[in-house]
Amino acid sequence: TIRAGRDPYFGGVNPEPIASNLGALSDAVYREGAMLGIATDGDADRLGAVDETGEFLSSQLTLAILVLHAAEQPGAGGSIVKTVSQSRLIDRIASERGLEVVETAIGFKYVADEIVNGDVLIGGEESGGFGIRTAIPERDGVLSGLLLAEAIVKSGLSPTSLVADIQKRYGPLVYDRRDLRIPPVAGLPLVRSIARTPPDRIAGLRVVDVNSIDGTKLCLEDDSWLLLRQSGTESMLRVYSEATSEALRDRLLDEGVAMATGGR
Image 1 (cartoon, one colour):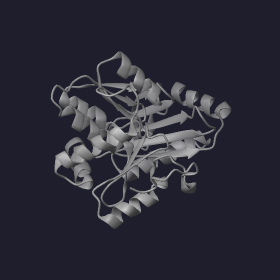
Image 2 (tube, one colour):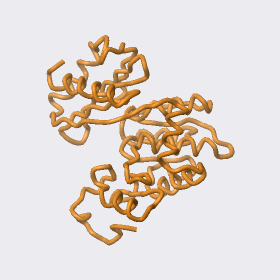
Image 3 (cartoon, one colour):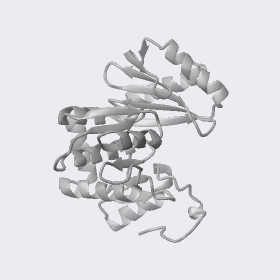
């Protein structure tokens, strides 16, 4: 255990459990030769994790592992709920398992609504919030961390090998996000305008669908996507992308930033 002492300043590090804040955890995992590192935020409702090499496990990959684990339990059924910025890996796993996918706006409150009102096996969001049917209809970082550890142990694989196996079975997808300081008064109309007049192609790929659940998500012919969304809590326009390669993902992000900053 590290950083377990009571400290309202969190050692001077933002308590959000994302890669940039988990350096001490990564170092400890590497130093101790551990299988997995688990972190929660200040109120322990969100989960961040690092693999046995100290590399961050994105929430997209974490949710994929948790979905597979939940789907293998006796009597597993119901829907999988994911926010619009979550991975297409979830759709591929659900299709194989005969499970429905429900996509919501970003924010765990939307996932929680589905858990309360529907037959939901598991739900997750990009910021590391996960909830399951057999617990309370809220995200729980401690429970999610325990389930992640259990899933990895039961697989008989290291975290890196498990991720490689998932991407081999369901196809490689890589994700990233860029944050731009753009106020809502400028960002909201820009995002709406892209939805009204979307490009025919991005990075040479045809746009096959426009999703406006939350922001504007441009879905491409190869299952890659680009999402532009104005933050609801700060003056930030976020550009998200998932693609079949790192090179394509970065190109999509570049084009998304260009759209947001007037270089379209």
